[in-house]
Image (cartoon, rainbow, N blue to C red; front, side, top):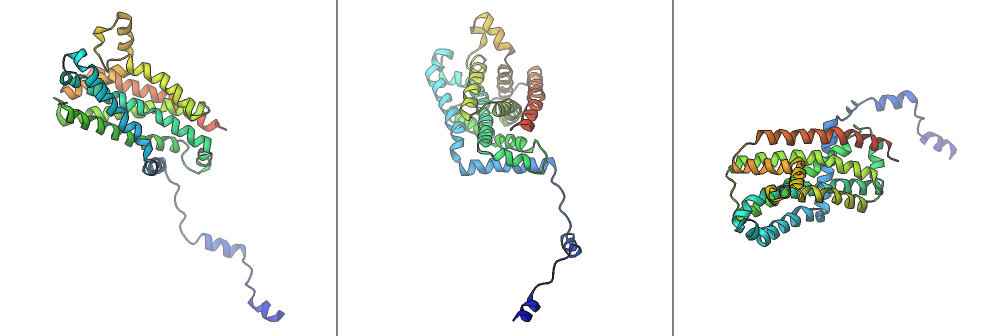
Length: 281
């Protein structure tokens, strides 16, 4: 019995034999920054697929504001709802997108609380890729929000004189600015302790920026000191650009201001976010 057992026992695995098996195939190359960022972006898209409730702010918020301001205040502010809609809709498009960006910090903070980002930081990938991927995934949400606002506007009677080209250019510039603004919320998502605190602080920042602007009314009707605030508000410059492109004009100076603001947002909050991300415990 012992002899039979000895004959059936497998031969010991030597180090050389194990190394030859492991080196038999070609070792896959390490994924680059673009590939890993797109992978994490796809993760963000899949989260939308499995949790469609994330699109509530993208769908209901712009619809509610468009209908409320058009039919409640349009007659008083512009004399007719149709005339006010031509002025309001580009502004609502801006407001809807910049307000949606707040969800970036809330989602990031939620992942941190669940321990997901600790796992991401342990992976042998480009360190910023989880953050960049999440921001790229949110661009899809901004695109959906833009499509909903424009479609609703067309149904209500909005007619952009700039045509399809003006609409596409304005949305493209809006997506760039929204992506850059999202870095502010990623910083807050890493600093604050809970998703509710991120939402509260973000709302305190965005409400003054969006309402003390030229989104809803012409600044000429405001007091002088408030006009000065509106004129330096980056949201006002963005709304002016979107309004101009949809009307068929190309406000080059305002476009420059928006692009400079976008670069500054990334230049300031991007490095701060990465330092916080590396040191997060």
